[in-house]
Image (tube, rainbow, N blue to C red; front, top):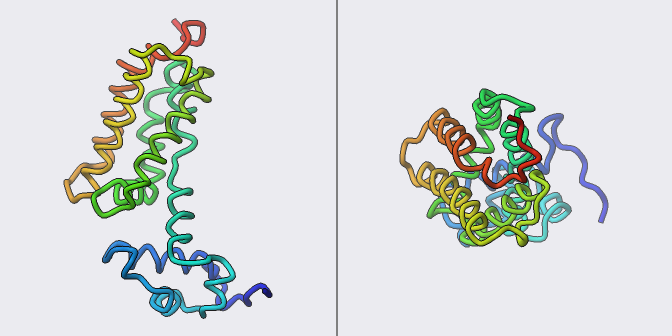
Length: 194
């Protein structure tokens, strides 16, 4: 299949398709969203849609994949080890507002139920890699503590996605507290700066 021609200078057709899908997804379940609606809202044709995606579920999968804050675990480890400071959490959260809103919605009752488990698993993997530890190799207490921390943060995101007013600043403050009090215990002792 030939690459679709570019209908407008910016954003490109693929981005417009994702934006149109997201606008529709926030107003109704995915099963009630059609390709016809997406392309009408995106200002492109069905051929363009199918060039990029096989169906509406593929659009959601791509959005979910890009919602993972992959830089966050490394930032947290660098804060714990003293390489970066706590203020950078607030700056990170602030600079990722659109991502935060998408994560909140996807983790809420309105989102894809499978996303929560994929998000949690990826955060556990990213945290382990950033900390230089094996999640499977952690003792049971530390493993459960890490799962509780990640699950708690996910619950904050989900509450916000369900309509509870939780400001980004509150999320950042909660993350700073968790980082300062809980996460250092999960790092190998040689990584911590005293």
